[in-house]
Image 1 (cartoon, rainbow, N blue to C red):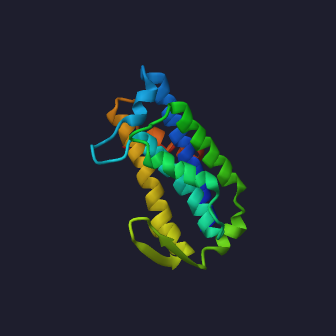
Image 2 (cartoon, rainbow, N blue to C red):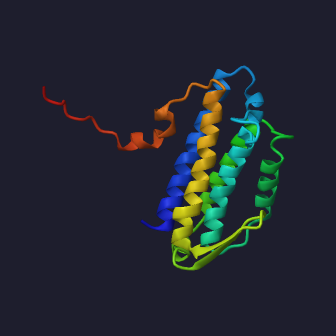
Image 3 (cartoon, rainbow, N blue to C red):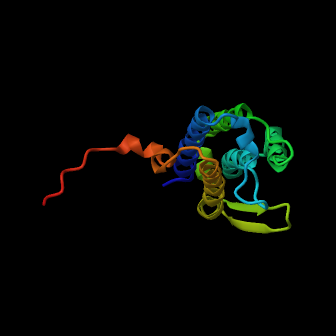
Length: 186
């Protein structure tokens, strides 16, 4: 598998899934915008931040592997995420951010991302940590785990808040591969 084959497909299918969960929440809850401030625990980020950070991770993966500077929109997305506890925004805002992330994913050139799999990549965090690895290791050990963390936290917050979601919602993309299985004998 290539970096683009892993990241672009994963980010796209899971962000589309996240949008579908939010649509379900909007249909099931009296005040869906209130969900944006919900948290699993007091010291965790709210739903709005989990959504924005999932979108941010999707943008970052492509830009890092293509060795591109981050566009200014990512600073806005990051700041929205950081301020999510004070300014959670609306469900419509969150769905717009997902649509923007999906559009950004369509703009990445797979061959450019794949070339980044062998190049050194430095990741510096604002908390004073830095990591050095190649692009393939970045995909496996950072990009995917970080993205799935925020996606899973969003799912968990929605479930905790009473939104009726199940495993089939989490892996809805798998139904493209569905087949009827043979009856098991006896």
